[in-house]
Every structure is written in structure tokens, then in C-alpha cells.
Image (cartoon, rainbow over all chains, first blue to last red; front, side, top):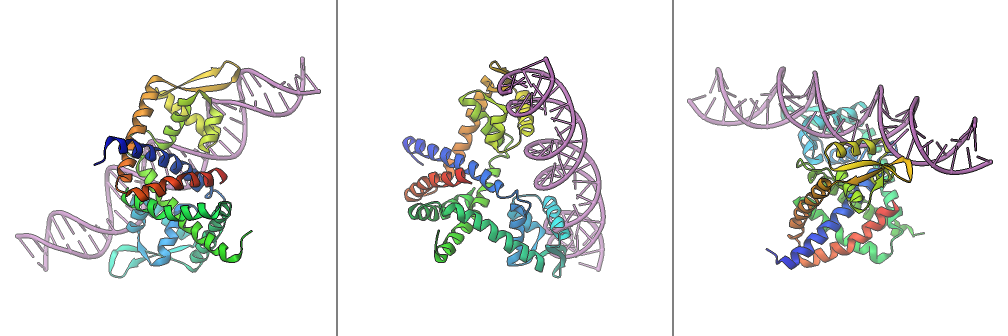
Length: 146
Length: 146
DNA sequence: GTTCATAGTTAGGCAGCCTAACATTTTGGG
DNA sequence: CCCAAAATGTTAGGCTGCCTAACTATGAAC
């Protein structure tokens, strides 16, 4: 429990955080619309890049429902970026795997996006970059708890 | 221009930033779905709260096209949260204004969201909160340049 | 005062998400 | 065993939010 004084400060920080987050969402979206893979597709591919995974896990990680995940995965499959195979240990489940083309597409798109963001980061000075780097794990912790 | 060594570091930071941002988007979305106003609606109302503004400015600030803004504004109007009136200085333009109910709804929703985020921030220690607070303006600068 | 630019709306379409209903497979209690 | 319940996906249908293209109405310029 906090005193009401710190509460006011917490609320102010919360408001600032929300505003920054909202603008960051626009930034994030603006990096989507260049005719490549969407952020969601990138996320799916990067999950599958580590190891084959089930549709339900894709859905959970993306924060969407299973039917919506199926829909997206089928599109990725039609684009030749992932394959769907029955899980040998449980024939109800479907394992989503990266194809070779999927891996290439993911790596290329990821690289392009990193370069675009890096170009923005390049405009900051070293102190600001250090501060940003220090803040990211903190935001991650918030994300994990939200 | 940076050396290739710093370039590698920039790319790594870019990747970490993108990942954090992506998760933050989920967090942001998760705060939408409680049957209240969406983030976009909140943004629109908060703009109109300062002063009446044109549909085209709403669209620009939200990063969407004018017809999409019209659509959202009409919904807000039907919900009784904003009014649309012809601009007295230019009858082509439409001024979007908060209604009394709109102002109340916006303030209440904003307060609720701030409280929810504040509850998360409350779980951080003081150093982390200070670091987060320091990083927000930096992220804002990135957002502004993206 | 015609012509061009500006501000919005309307119409039609697409993508992504949802819930509900369904088929299939696994699990587990009787 | 065996049948009921749970788990995993898919299909079907609908909603929302965004888009472009086409249109109306007003303002500005020459």
C-alpha cells in the first residue's frame, strides 16, 4: 500500500506511460504497412523458428483466440512460410513449423525492421540509448504482469 | 555515421526495443477489452477535450484516413459523447466537440486506466520507476521521428 | 464566374478478430 | 474395457475498423 502522495505520482507516471505507449503503437503499426509481413505474422514465424509449436500456443502467445490463430496460420501456409503437420504424440494437435522459405522471409524482414529502428536509435546520444536499454527490461516486467 | 561495431549494438538494441514494443501492444490491447471505450476513442475524446477540432485533424492524429475518422466520430456522436457542428469560419469543415457526457465518460475511463497501470507500476521499486520515467521522453522522441 | 483545391460523407470491399457449433482424439472413472 | 468428459482444431457466420474510389458542397484564385 502506498500513501496518497505516492499514489498521485504513480497515477501521473501511469498517464505518461499510457500516452507513450499509445504513440508507440502508432510507430509499431507504421512499420507494418510496407507490404511485407505484419507484426503478428513476424511473431508467429519467430515462435516457430525456435521449435514447432501448436496452434493453441500460437494463439496464447499472440493474445488471440484459437480460430483466429488457425486463420492466420493457414494464410502463412498458403504463402509457403509454414507447414502444418499432425503431432505424432497427439493426433488432435497440429504442429506449426517454419519452412525454409519461411525462415528466409522472417530473417530478412526482421533484419529490415531492425535496421529501420536502428536508424531511429542512431539519432539518440549515448546516454539516451543507455537509458532506453535500461528501461526495456522494466517495461518487459510490466508487460509480463499485465 | 557509426562504425560497424556500434552498428551491431544498435541493431541489438533495435531488436530488443521491437520485442518490448510488441508485448506492450498486447498489454495496451488487453486494457481495451473491458467493454469501455477503446484506446482510439479515448484518444479522440482527449483531443476534443482540449478544443473542438476538425475531422481531418482527428484522422491525422490517429494515423488513419479521413473516412475512417468520420466513421468513428459518427459512432461517438451516436453514443452521445461528441457533437458535430459546421465550422462557422468554413462551412465545409466539421468541428468535433465533447459533450458533457463525453467529458465525464472520458475522465472516468481515463482514471480507471490510470489506476490499472498504476497498480502495475506499484509493483516496481523506486529505482525502476525512476528509470522508466526517465526513458519515457526518450521513447517519445523516437515516436515523434518515426 | 468558371475552375481548381479543400473538407467530409457515402459506398463497397477487405482483413482480423470474435463466438458458436462441429469433428476428432485423448483421458479417466466405473 | 467403455463411455462420458475434456482437449485440440476447424468451419461457419458475423462484427468492427480500416482502406480506396467516387461524390457533394464549399472556398479560393485568376
